[in-house]
Length: 294
Image (cartoon, rainbow, N blue to C red; front, side, top):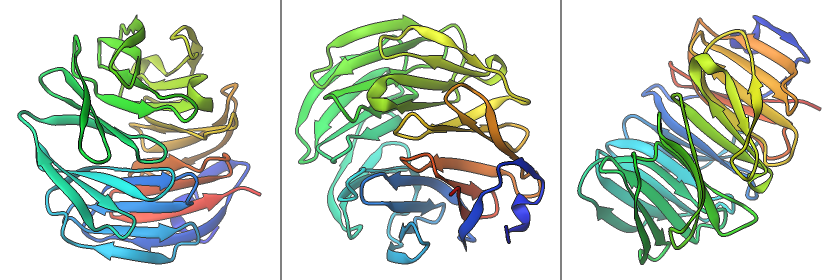
C-alpha cells in the first residue's frame, strides 16, 4: 500500500488502485454500480467523472454551490443540489438537462438505478418523487423530513429514514408499504440486496441492521461512533466511518475484516463497490483514494 493514509491499519490489507487530489475539498462522491464510474463533486462546483482505474473521463466546473450529488447506477444521469433549494439534472457528459428550484431547503436526494426517477425531501417534511423528464408523480407529507433516501434496485420502491422519527418503505406513488418508528438518530443509511438489508449509522447505538420489512435484526458494535455507512449491492461487505476518523470493513455478520485509522487526514465520505471488493474514500484535504481486495 503506497498511500501513507493507510499505514495505520490491520486485517486483510487491500491494494491501492488509485489516489487523486481535489484541493478545493470534496463535497460528495457516488459510484455507478453498472457503469463502474465514480463521480466526485467539490466545494467550488467542480464535477469530475472517473473510471474505476482512476482516469478522469469528463470534468465540468459550472456547478457552483454544490451541496449534494447522486449518480445513477447506469451512469447516464445524475442530479446535483446547488445551494439550499436548486436542483440540476445532468447527463453522462455532465451537461445540464434541466434546472429547478423548490420552496424550502433540500435535505436529501436519491436517484433510481437507471435514472428514471428522482426523489427528494425538503425541510418542510415533504417528499417529492419526479421522473427524469421532470414530471412530478408523488408528493407526500411525512412526520419529519427524510434525511436519507435510497431507491431499491429490484422493485419500484424507495427506503426513507428521518432522524428520531421513522424508517419507511414507499412505492413510486408515495404509498406507504411499511413504517417503523426510530428511537435514535441516524447519521447515514445504506441499502443492500434490493432492500433485504438496511443499515443505519446510529452513532452511539452502533450500526443498526433491518430487514426488508423494517424489522430490526440487531446491530454491529464497533470501536467508535458510526457516522457514515456504505454497503455493497451483493451480500458481501459493509464499510463504516466513525467520528474518530476510523474506517471499518465488515462482512454482513458484522465481523471486522479490515480497519484503518486516518486521523491525519480525516475521511469525510466512503463508498463501496457493488461486489464488495473495493472501497472509495474521500478525505478532508481532498484526497480521493480507491482500495481493492483480490
